[in-house]
Image (cartoon, rainbow, N blue to C red; front, side):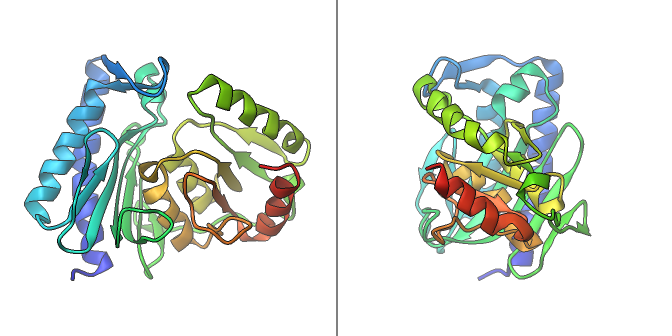
Length: 267
């Protein structure tokens, strides 16, 4: 079994190559390939091309490992390891030219189920800025090779909170209604549009917390390990890891207060 550090090097090399491809396709012009859950939930040809590249490189380097990607489905593992990949997280940002999209690659031990897997290494690259967030279990988290840590807000009222919204109009309205009571309790709200980047920003202190329901495994796999290794709280108020039910990541100094606040409003 390779060490987390060895797995991280594989993730880094492939994420950098994939990020360079995504940046080239963004510069050439983006073409929508199809819609998914709704007409505004789109996939571009670049999403598919970048995932195909990542899948091919991993097959060369780790032929016995499983693969769980957003665009091309899953393949079973014979090694006990599975790579969880979002080729372009923030596809709508990518489409519009916003510099907030990422390539996210994580490797987990166990079945590809967020409630039971054990993440070992991850790399999240922002091709627009060149920033690279990394983590290997037990070795901490880094931004461009330098150690990172969460912020230390004194309380919830001094905290910058991020969240996201579903592409389904009905669910989005429900999420907006739940967010309303929280707005007056925090410094402000951000909606970046790429969950992996939100989680990395909590890890390095650019955000104080991030809360969202409905994330897919590839949305949070890479960023959650980076946040955890940086020292953020990544368990929900009920003690569960990030999943479709709830992804909760916060600076330790406000985690309990934020947990109580979202529980009180039924988030």
